[in-house]
Image 1 (cartoon, rainbow, N blue to C red):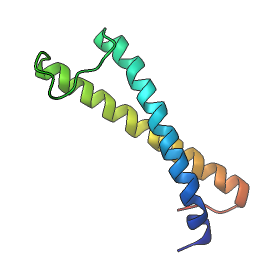
Image 2 (cartoon, helix red, strand yellow; image 1 turned 180 degrees about the horizontal axis):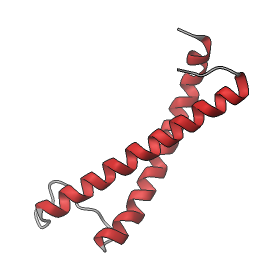
Image 3 (cartoon, helix red, strand yellow; image 1 turned 45 degrees about the vertical axis):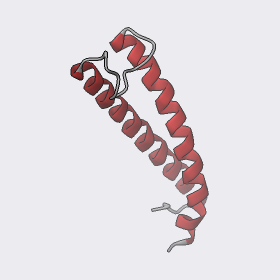
Image 4 (tube, rainbow, N blue to C red; image 1 turned 120 degrees about the vertical axis):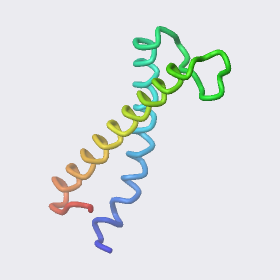
Length: 88
């Protein structure tokens, strides 16, 4: 395993936690716009329709994956600028 990959592990973990918080906040804001409510439905909410539950899950998945990829890619690019090597 390359030294840059090992050195990047703790940075990657911190960035992963940060991206989860960012994505969670983005999802809450997006759901307020799309769902016109403060709380997104859970899969076990009896009073919510299938369509609403599945839309919330899809939106959450897209936002989490996009934010995580952007943060991971930005972190790797920053490491290359600092050290000259790509962490992957």
